Length: 148
Image (tube, rainbow, N blue to C red):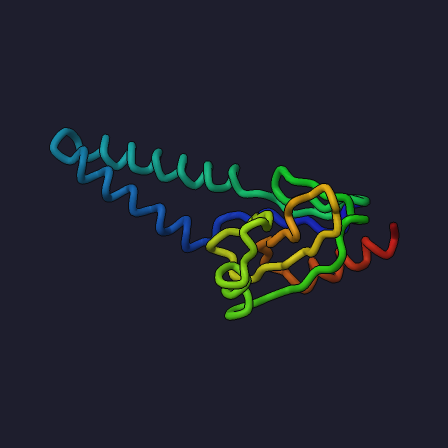
């Protein structure tokens, strides 16, 4: 049963920022052909946005598993989860970050959730996950843990 799912897709401003490849490519190809430069620029922009979309990890709660990108952990190894926003989220991604933590964070998503683990075979003490809906994710995780 799927109780939470979110793709960490690029924000609209990332898509716009990548758009600077169009005028840059046009300038490179301007001595040859303006239309060729614009066409190659648009193609490169579309390819870059496509790669950002395809490479974006998905966070999901499916049955007894938490998945973040390619990583999976059983919910029985999850101790608790805490949501952080703004300065607290910045602190979790910065000075409070444990080097052993497993990360699925994206710079264009400010809120994070810290998922503490109790797996003796896993060297990561916690996962730090970007999510646009941290409170909803924590609530779904707590609800999923109660059903196991």
